Length: 299
Image 1 (cartoon, rainbow, N blue to C red):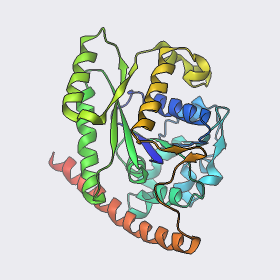
Image 2: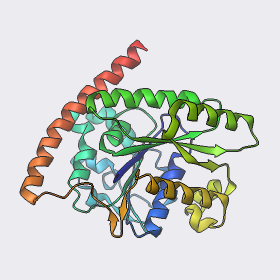
Image 3: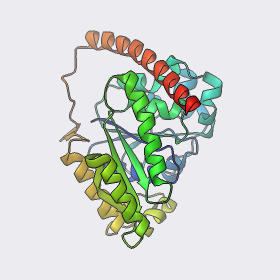
């Protein structure tokens, strides 16, 4: 899978940490990942040390003006490319509404990117245009689940959201539940892992991300954990995670980056496919949003 959204409607679960460290590993493998920060809090953008000169130079430019992603991409010292976030993105829902054209804009922009490479999306935790856009644009979703007392509630909430979207996408969205902040000495960690595996089976990653001080400290140094503490347990855990995702084909790479799942069509045919996909995507996102809103109202 070429496009992965890292998403949980519950905050503080390790979403940005997971995006940061998977991007760092993919870059070290020469995969040239593109990372998109969809969270208006812009934590990932800040960790990368990127100062966005104005809102239009961030992902906000895509929603406000239809600016191509290539024009919004910054290089990072970590060796990967980033489309940064900005606090102005918090106004996307109110400024541009939740119409199909807005909700499908990210997927359309990624479809028009000429280079095949892995894409990681650090999704906004709030259910709205930004988070829905990331799921509609994704081939798969990684759902970090921290081992605290609200963990299962967050997992169930995510499952409901994805099922609502799948109803209109007419396909199952592949997902992996990633256990984070795990401590085998804590009964709660053990119990939550057991409950997750009983409920979601093989969709729960075998790899667990342990509670580790290096993972907490590395962002303060504008580094991923492999730069900050390459011999730490956190570095080992994320290395094991990527190996697992590659071994199970959740992420597929070739020697030059992503291995496309289909042969690319000629330019004229690709343009026609994109137009049809745009129309289909707009219908799907509108129906999906109506369904989710209906379930939230009745639930």
